[in-house]
Image (cartoon, each protein chain N blue to C red):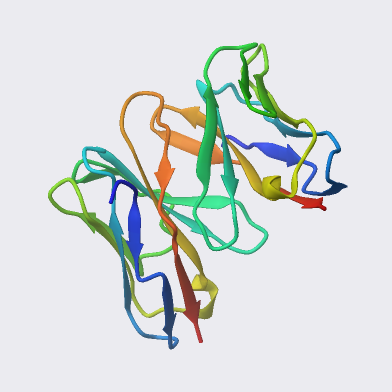
Length: 113
Length: 109
């Protein structure tokens, strides 16, 4: 497809379990972003990739959160030992060029019971 | 820390009315983007403005970037139920976008 895709669309897990969220950016987009969106809150920046490198990880809430990107394409966000406060929609976006117009995927809704 | 404040937070109007949503900051941005998000979906880019004072029109939507590139407004003329959604502004600086918390617009038939 032409757009950003994310999987799974929904994930329900138990507290303490690890989860992996996947993002497939638009082909050729060198920049990739992860955001978290909670009810009533704006988009919270998590991490920025340029190619396979992550020059800005400043938004990761704790060391339970990590992300990687391989082949300048697919990215995985991993949350270890999930907590109830991790419940949110996790959005991925990709962009290319200097103006940084970001194109978003549909998100993964994570629910931690 | 760059912050973007959007107002109003909630807006419920009747079909055919006009409305304006505001996005304000004390920081200067190199670009200002507006997105619309519907339930269960990711934000969709509506417009990007990069020049102070710039005005862009997209059908019934008019976007303006402030002269000092610190604020922006979105005006919708003759709103329709299909305009219902969460409107987000985002200020661009280098590689990063700073998002406002959004304006939730409901247009009633």
